[in-house]
Image 1: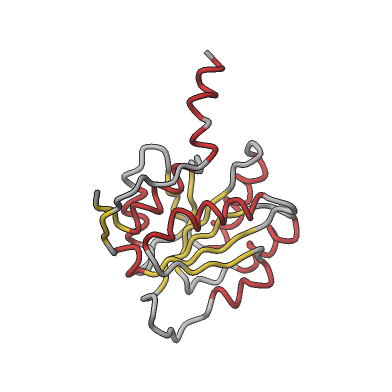
Image 2: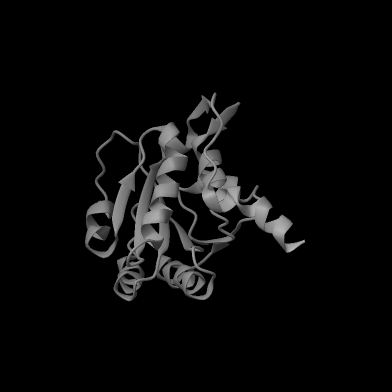
Length: 187
């Protein structure tokens, strides 16, 4: 089966039961938004500035069930460290996914990983299509474990657009794997 990187991001977020994302559409994340618009379970919310996205995702994390997490979808050159820093200081888990420039080209813009390193638990840059789902699962786990906090994942535009045959079954997140059992127990 053929999958693009953006389709794998959507799959991973659906597996994590993310219902809302917050952010601004830009050149480096347009493909992610196009894919999320096809989701029956995720609603992408567009905001006027990245700081608003951070605070909205923070509110989702603060008011949701344990294990649920607020998600931000931004461009890699967006500066939202104030909202992320607030979540970091308060121990609020956030999943920050940023579209970025081509994977193996130097950028003249701001290095978000370097900027967010002091106010996030971990930073990832995905350069291979096969790493998308497992990295997003790992980022969510890091964000909610120990003292919760924000985790940043950059996915370059070429990785989002890349199409590859996926031969083996995609990983299933534990929360999604246990969902049918929970539904049966409630009946």
